[in-house]
Image (cartoon, rainbow, N blue to C red):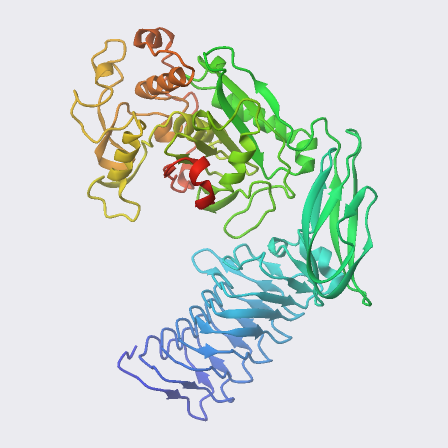
Length: 630
């Protein structure tokens, strides 16, 4: 390592091999000249140098080893040798000035993990027929990870090369057409990794997006975008389907109508688009499934029998359920199960009769929800944002929820909306508005207890969404007012929530007579379990909770006593009734704090940090047009 070496470097004629790490972390800041006689460059030979300008590689290289040019500063278009067979791990990583279309010559077989990661100015890729594997590896990254500038990919192989998960993380897979041999379109659309690209077509551009459509028995309309290199026309269309336009030129937005059918009838077919005067075609696969309920039809799962205001509203909606998921009963069974989980914990079990519960049948084009690196066409645009976070089109959800029988603008802020993403991944977050409105995201987690879907909905929907409780878990071994982690202003977060009348289960003082649950500490009916415990709201010190364990701490099926009291107060207020503490005590069921099932430690070990609720200013009715998907 010679950091004081600066300027340019020219490898003399006669040198054919450059050993590994020869110039690692040297201070060169000029150009690098490699003559064609060089046949081997060792791993990390030029890693961390600051060479500028274009890189001309020796024409006879067959292997570019690991990290050879990692962290250099080359620019312009990179021309790779035609003899190249293998590109090693992180070979060109972090050369962010490389640009243009990178074409890999015939003969290349493997592109290693991280080979071009963070080459964010690359604009296009052309893969040869010989390519076998595009790799990704934990700790190294995907071959083209975070290549944000890529806007075109051509793969010439009739057999889709094997892509390891994460190889294209960060590449916008819905922003351009993946061009493949026409005979292989079907294979690419189902191949692991390639199927995440939403626009796959023959080399001659003709694509319909989305390329699938579905319907229940009721009539369904769906917008399609046809993007062609010239004039296009419809070659065939299934019976009972119609298009607002059957021919056009270049890019057109058209409406596909799938007409209503019998509730017992299912059918499928393809709308085939064709470039005029050419044999290039693209298909949009259409399915329709018979079902007893219509798309967007509301169904009452429970009607309130107590309260003075007609009941407190819960609207539970799934996202990422296509026509098959709905027609085979999966959707309704999932919604009913989630509601049973919601009411399967005190005090909701005892006060269940105060609630109306509604669901509807929002139809998604595709099954499942998206992630940072995958895209799904679903009703509300629900997607994981990284880790356990989720978001959707909040405006659309609120508009949709207000079509429920007793939900309106006057009671929206006292209504709870639960979104169930059609995913078994662990996740969950509650989006809340200062006026009280809330959308709780509760996936169908199959992680071990207590991180299963039961734990998620009781924490996110019952705890945050309706109960307005704060998180009690601890992530930072620090005082809440002195933490240097990137997530802070947590003191302000607690104080703001307190000003809204929320977070009754947390305090920023440990003084016994000043905490909000002091009346419980000295009540003999609760004094054996209620006290003051330091730690909560992500921090080990400076914030206090009332009991050692609760659903707001580790998702067990138990709310602390102050949490149960706070929830009952809210139920009574929303129902137009007076809260009475002695009545609360008489009806209160102190279920065991000790879970009847042991915690699955393996699931805890793979858990990512949960997110505290996101609290939006104002009301979704007044601010939503200005804060869509904030």
